[in-house]
Image (cartoon, rainbow, N blue to C red; front, top):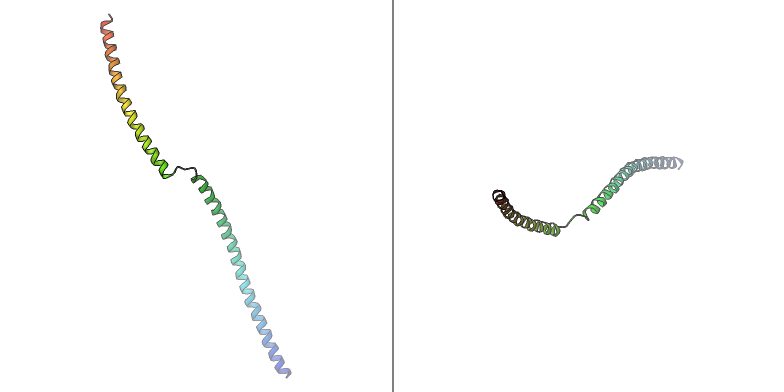
Amino acid sequence: MVNELKEWLGLAALAISVGGFIYAWITSRSKVNEEHLKSVDATLANHALRIQAIEGELKHLPAKDDVNDLKLALAELGGTVGRLDESLNGISRTVRRVEDFLMKEGK
């Protein structure tokens, strides 16, 4: 009976030591994973801040319809400037003719 008890206690001690080894191995792996997760969380927080900054800047940019309206307004303005240029050319030619006339007839 004492021998049987020694065998059982030996097996129990072996099981406890193997269990302790497995527990230590698992917890050491979880510590490594915990450190890795902390670095991933820090990176994720950094990315979240950067995304918030970008979203804040994008709110100030014009939308697609606004840009289209600007294009149309610029095209209209270009046409108006072209018409004004033609009018000014005609006025310039008239002023030159009047000036030439006054220079010749003003003697």
